[in-house]
Length: 493
Image (cartoon, rainbow, N blue to C red; front, side, top):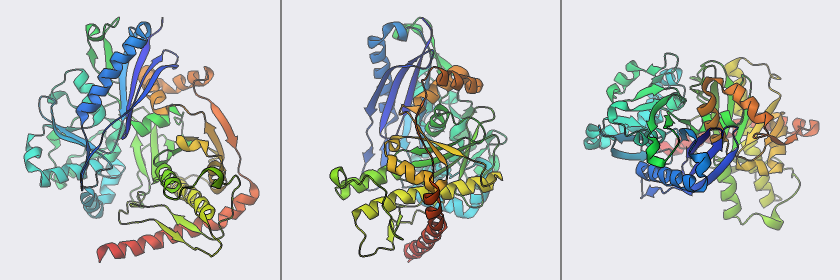
């Protein structure tokens, strides 16, 4: 029997645990909820609980599929990219996982962006989440900061603990560096100049490694496997999802319609959006694969919020697209992400007497399309692409089931929408990284050949709707920017 691969995705709300065979078939897949600890100001998670779930899932897999499990070749974790946790020299947690939902350090993001945002983006590619959280911890919790030996992330913590690491072994993978604000992506190291300017101790930062590198082994006696299981560095969840969906060649484009709506574009070099700050540029850790990425809005969460708050669905859910007649839904409830404008709030503009819940619903769907189009325009500008250079886009995530939404976005972006079959693409990406490393393009071809990854449907833009939306795309962004200026003024007063 061929080798098997253990793949885990450490998400914000759940952990996906899986065992895949040598061809990429998913033998076992489970989803376990993970707890967030909140109070009036904070939202943190306990890394130890992530580790415990991974261990319990390994045991469960070994019970259910002993013959496959015994041939486990490697273990890899993908996971959250914009957080930080602190460990001591013995790999014990000093400061819990503070992730994207925890907004206590947001003022530090704003300060860093305003003072040296361009320099930070040119070096590391994106929003300085890690830098802001480290400075926030240092200035507000100095007693913890002094005890922290290394700052790491969730995937590092789980993988390192599986190998019984100490703080000196701490590492992090390339794909999350764009969220650090502290890295030099071109030189593939920490940026000492930026660390000094921010007064961050560079010795508290871990080693940087490629996601497919082996960092240690799980003894074969621990889980009764045929041989030692290689533990790999791991990769950020967005990068893993892009890879799993086959966004691995220059010019590939993907719409991730999940809790957050993300537009991803594959390129072959590091080009930072230091001017407009709409795009994050990350290095996947795989040679020649870089991504321009924009988090356009909380798309999936917004969709769920609308249906629940307004009891919208069932018989009220229309089957045909409705003309919203100049109504614009600005979706940035809780802040605009790209570019970073935390003072932003949601808005409806252009309400007329005949507008109803259907109108609001369709304008909400359109708003995500307009935001995606705005990000795509920035991708074209940053990469010097001609207007018609991109013809199609893949879509993955829970939103693929909404055919009306897919049609709207196809017409707004004037692209063929390729609806992918619903599978856990982060897990597939983990598998490709684990088995093929830098040669994952060949691995993806095999997945397509074996129909592990396949297309569900293709949607083509319609000429009349392309013309219709062409009148609204620019106007929407002008309105959104003006609304942003108003909220900015209100936030200062």
